[in-house]
Image (cartoon, rainbow, N blue to C red; front, top):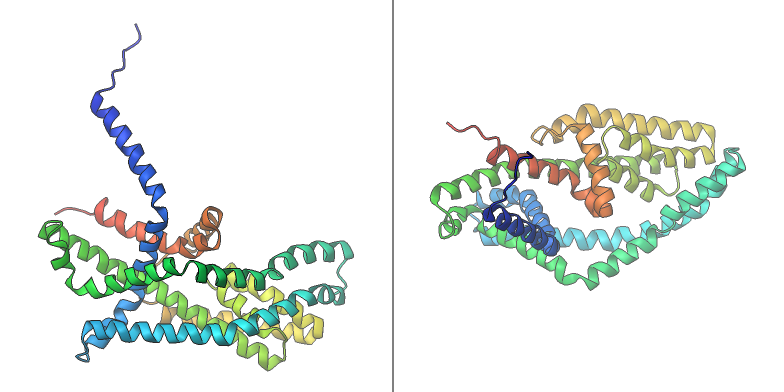
Length: 326
C-alpha cells in the first residue's frame, strides 16, 4: 500500500505565514532598497565622521559637516559636468558613422554598429535628463534615503543603547559586530571602488586632452564607469577612445591604445594595491556574475548595487549561519 502522507496544521500555518511574509517583503521592496542604500551610505561616510570626532567635534556636528561637503560636491558636479557631458556625448553620437567610415569598415557593419551604439549613446543625454527629472519628481524618496543614512550615522556609536529596548544585550553586541564588519568590508569596497573610478576617469581625461582627442569627457566617464567591471572593463572602455583616435590618424589611435594600456598597468600595480588594500576581496568572476544578474533584475540600479548585495549577503551568512560557536 502507498504510504499515507500527513501534513500537520502547524506546517500549513507556517507555509501560509511564510508566503504572506514573502508577499509583504515584495510589497515593501522599495523601502528595503532605500534602507540598503542608506546603510551603504552610512558605511562609506562613518569613518570620516569618526575621524572628525577625534578632533573633539561632536558627532552631530561631524555628520552635518560631512553632509554639507557631500552636498557641495554633488551640486558642483551637476553644475559643471552635466552640461559639458550632454554636449560632448551628443556630438560623439553624431560623429560615430563618420568615424567608422574613415576606418574603411564594411557598410553593413557600419549600419549595424551605428544603430546599436547610437541607440545607446545617443539616448544618454535624454536618459540623463529623465534621471534628473526622476530625481526631482521623486525627491521624497531621495530625501528618505539620506534621512535614513543620517539617523544611521547619528545612532551608530550608541547602537547598544538603541537596541537594548528591542533585543537582549548579547544580541545587540552581535548586531554591532555585524555592522562593524559591514563597515570594514562593504564600506571599504565602496570607498575603494569610488576612488579607483575617480582616479581612472581623471587620468583618462587628462591623457586624452594631452593627445588632443575630442569627446574626452564622455570617454573618460565611460572609463570610470567600466572600472567596476573586473578585467574586461578597461579593455571595453578603451575601444571607443581608440576608434576616435584612429579617426584622426593611425598614430593617434595607437597612442590612445598605449594610454589605455599604461593607465591599466598603473592601476593594477599602483592604484589597486594602495586603494583596495583594506577592501573586501570579491572574486572577479563573482563580481562579473553579480553585475550581469543585477542588471538583468533591476537594470542599472541593480548592477550598481549587485556587488554590495553580494558582500552584505556574505557577511550576514558568515555571521549568522556559518559562524562557529565556541
